[in-house]
Image 1 (cartoon, rainbow, N blue to C red):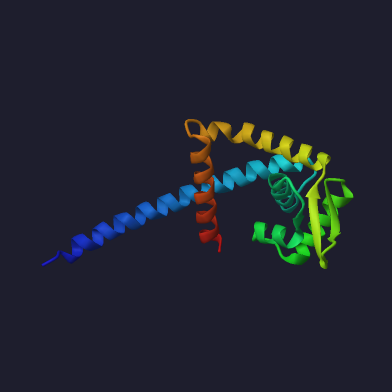
Image 2 (image 1 turned 60 degrees about the vertical axis):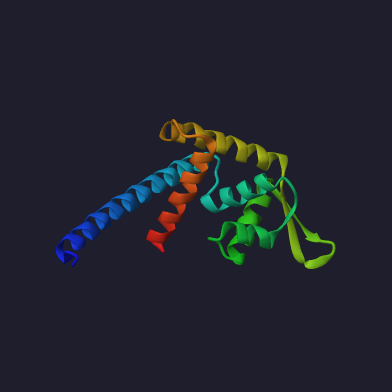
Length: 156
């Protein structure tokens, strides 16, 4: 017959370990987010603007504004429109009507937008580099992806 007190003690230790892992994940992701926020503020960008610019930088082609919204997950369609308006005003992205569907808007990073995104990413990498020492690029990406998921699970 199983020892209920011993089982409870094992579960309690596991729960304490999970809490510590979650707390570490939350702290680490929050630290990365703070580094990124501090860096991008030097480029007069907020996190939403940087996120959109980063997505467009990575796409390297013109994409539908709805795809940008889906790629951010965090921002509404109205927010993406406001963000893209601000980026257009700074000359970081272009937006035009899709010739095959007037309802759709196509956006693309300009050379100036690519330059700002690349500089900001280089600065973020430089500041977060010591935290990732000893990890390959793939391991770093996987860790950040996992930490982001943990952070979103905790913060809802």
